[in-house]
Length: 384
Ligand code: GAF
Image (tube, rainbow, N blue to C red; front, side, top):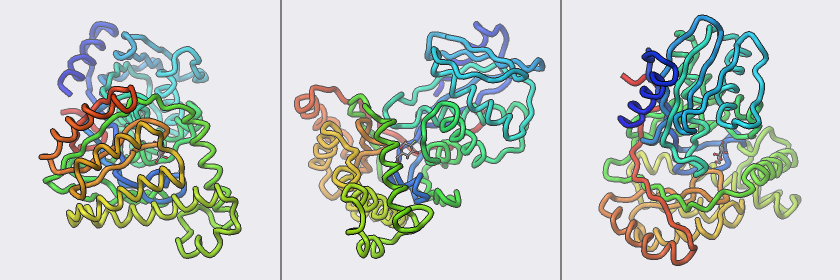
């Protein structure tokens, strides 16, 4: 984080010409279990990670927002709060900031401009929520600069709204909520209907290992939207608001009335919800054997029923499984169609995992992995 801070301060002072008044951060996340359940009003169990988006900022009085993006060669964006805030087709990164600002204004928050420099080390396009971290850090920045009376949950909802309505990606609420409300050394059991959260302490003797398959995530938006539609169709047939309201017994009794593909999608969501709630208990009790079983079932369900894993990701999961046996768990994490796997393992296994992946993954897939050993960190806030 020290590098991020010094880079962002440097960009602020060199490009904008004076010292920032505040430093703010928001983390990326890894989801331990509960995939594609958030937009079904279900449960998720993510934790915030020690990869963050960092902002240096200062307020202005002339209704202008100026932004410098360190990660895009100090590219800049500028807009006026008194004019319509337009989508930028040639500068995608700027739309996350524009969208968040526009949604804050629409919610009735008032402020008079800002200078913002932004950087981050959340891997982009890996399924670790770099977009949510950016949306949340910008919401948090305005909260800090203008003492806005906005809760962390509303910062998350505002970020999701920006992504859904301005950027045009139909995501659920998990990523923004964990980035806004994560807690050090804890995972978060989130009820995506009520937005109630429970902090679940991470067992001390477990490492969180994230391995990026570096398989470029293809067709993510269209496949994601198709899955959402299939889940909505299943909910309609069951006559409920969302699949969260269907038990596995109810599903089994009526599954034959559903189109085969829709039934598989629904079965993933319904069983994943149950697994996620049980996993929170397993984690809380440091019952890593059960946690490992649940993560394995989750992966199989994503592979066979929801059909969102790819060869590279399945390969990584199998390599890690062969190393850890019953000592922990491993599964794909995030939206799918590429991206990362997550393993919860005793720290003594980390070197063996690295060695096994290095020896086998590239040989099997032609791709080179990236490995991140992470800790669960606090959600968004001011950097002291
Ligand atoms: C992506 C989405 F942004 C989340 O809302 C969630 O649906 C996830 O995919 C799948 O669990 O990260």
